[in-house]
Amino acid sequence: MLNTSDNLILSALFDSSSVLRPFTLSNIKDIPAHGSIIYTVFLDQSDFIYVGIGGLSGKSVTDRNPRSRIRQHTQGTRSGDQFCIYIQDFYVLPTLLGQSYTPVKGHLDRLTKEFIQTRLSYRYAVIQSDDSDKVVRRIERELQSGQHGHPIPKLNGMTQ
Image (cartoon, rainbow, N blue to C red):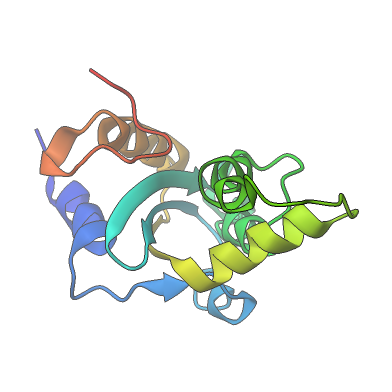
């Protein structure tokens, strides 16, 4: 059963009146400096492809940084970022198949960054409570399994 705060969070993540933000460093400053974040990612402003969370480390809510995960995605580097690996595997590499390719250090990361910054956008909700890490984990799992009437995200959804 949804509570009022869950409804507000889901509205921030899916309501078309909530702004879709491009993955740019300048947008990160708009995210509050502490708490936990849950965010939904859309391809070409329409296809729901990913739900993610951040700001999980830290004992207190003021120790949690919701900005770091979005910043990491914006940079497009695959190292340690499952989201960027998914983007490269599902969207960047298929554009290179069948073409001549000469490996250049950092080239795939640059292509991934360009794709993220030009084709993807996100909505987010920041929770600033002592249990914010637990709240975002729960809602992420629920959205990954298709609860609450939203489609299962293409890249990290779970089949029921």
